[in-house]
Length: 112
Image 1: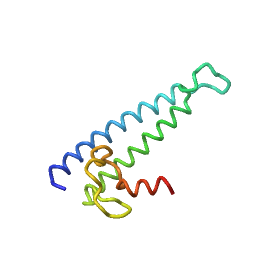
Image 2: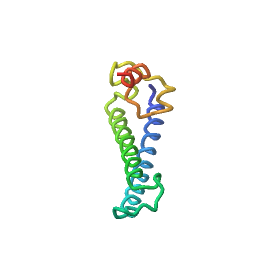
Image 3: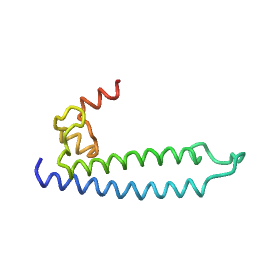
Image 4: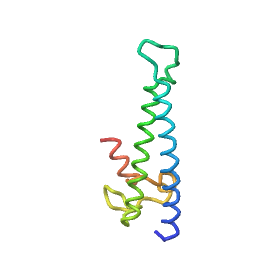
């Protein structure tokens, strides 16, 4: 992978990390301010603090994956599958730049 490509991925990952951190902070604030005492059921299910908390956890998980991808980039292992060691395809990295696995290893992990 060229230096220019690595810099492009770094910029994408940093922008995504920062955007996710902002989103997570907003979601955390929403959960804190929208929490209702037990017994109050005037909100729709999709607006409950529990749903918001679950979404916040999902975003935090992606943020951690982005941070780990940046660490791999700094260590020289970015773009290599963490399972088999083969290069991760450019199309996959373009779609999910924080992915630690090639398509084949990701499929194996999903199945088993």
